[in-house]
Length: 424
Image (cartoon, rainbow, N blue to C red; front, side):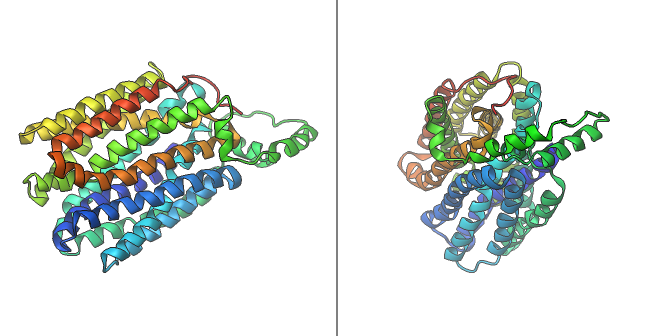
């Protein structure tokens, strides 16, 4: 379950990461302006914002697995098609479609896995799931380093590799089980029991099924009556956590995507060659993996809230150091620290998000949080050129550091759910 969902997560990261290397080559090959490159990056996030909201709503209505497979198919085919773009406007259009699939996939996958994970290790499992992002981003850095600079059409071949999710979507549809909690919430008790039996069989355990079909049948009408609605996220018991969660998602997305989507281009603008900037980006990316490992360990010892806040404060300090870096070693060192803390924070954020809502609106809540976050990801790439022109890299990363600090404050407004059973 974890590896199957994680592989889809890695493919998602690979696609998002590839665009940062594509931007750097298009700036040279097509002589594209900063504004045009900003729209190539930002339009994907517009699609991700829309996709996250729609994906969450659909997952609470038709199922987590079905939506997960659909998102992989959409963004896989669209990524392959974008490799054939002959004009910047065509590439922008395809990136929007890619974003629709990308945006829906992550909150749905995290919801699916969280509903299977045992309470005592649920946070750790979700951080491990999120760590597949580092694997995908590292693969994108390898492709960017080896493939993109190799020829004039290197960026096309790199995007063509992104079509792999279309194939994997078939595997997802056939092999991964549907969430038992979702099936029960829709009154599909026999399917839920069949899924539970699959897990019991794989563990060598036999548990008698529920004896009373009448009880199950009577619960069906109650379970299937509830329909996910966005307004439910602001019920009296949930509105505070929803507001705090949206604040964290917005600030983390702004700083993360503002920094990492533009990182190769920023390094090129700082005087490094295209190949060297890609190599440095690859080194910086590798620091994501120990960041996830530390977050996975701490999230079940410190709890979600303290772990998330600590990694966000570390991200703020790292961003400030990157803005002040002058020597190559300082750039790489500060960049690795930023990767370590920022991706550790991402792991904790994805762990806490599905835990805050009951089953009937869990994917809706996760989808809206991700959608709000993606709205910041739309703004960040557009803001980078202006901030850099105004005050250079120093001002740019000072702004990112400020957003990380605001996110850390927002994290303290989230309830602590370590070791607790998910709400029904």
